[in-house]
Image (cartoon, rainbow, N blue to C red):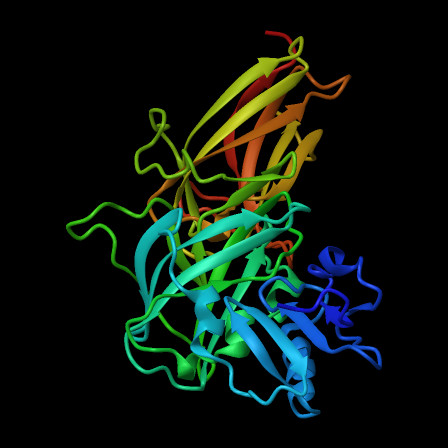
Length: 390
């Protein structure tokens, strides 16, 4: 135990518990008289993990030694002689309870993935714990990375650049074959919709994903797919600062309504059916588009919904232009063959003509170029005629 009045330095998470002492510094400041240093490498989010490790190892080179180390806690004492981290220090990466989002997948022939947990710290920041097991000795050129994606599927920059504590202290080439490691991210702010993701690359090449659920066992509880180097394993929402899964009810392999007689077919997606409802004193249109994905990992596209005069040039009187899909599930995450229902609302402008056409189409978000229909012809599909007075 640390003597009651001994000068010490502690990381910002532990410092409040020790700040009553006469000399209590915030690590990495050790002052001139600190005799002890106490840090938890798994929760220190004020320092880059590599910087934290560098500062601690520097103390070991300056006359400090390890007094005790267990479960990610490291207690150093000035003048102690022990320099080698014991096995117990790495127990913070041991498998405890099974992951809440449990599945079975493999990245290449090197790593099995058993799922993950999403938890939050006191301030509501998101922490993700991936459960991984090496199937063979891992080479030092293997790079494991974790990230949070936003609602549009873009990695939040600070979650990519921030390594995990385990990988900083125990590189993959030191992992034991057959042992399950829990790779925990540091607490991070998340967007209202976010995706926990994992990637494994070997000399710059992503390890391919193989889903092992479903062959004689239960299906995966979340949608598993690989987009680029990243393994996507379900979306989450933050509501009232509480994280919950947003995956329920998305996966559908049959059309929710009867298909239209003349559906729209694009290379990226098939618009099999749609529903149009007048609301708000007939001043608004509620439109439900039922899409079937034509492939997995398609590039993101924009969808337009235009209300145009029935006669003359198709100049929009009202329109909705936004990414295809929903904020929780953009089209770049769709799986081939599944159905996605997209709700849209369009206001009928004052002074609109008696007859209007409702058109839908897809276009490239970068160039603005519309994608042509495979069937019927053209670059937009007419959903129906809208009358200002029924």
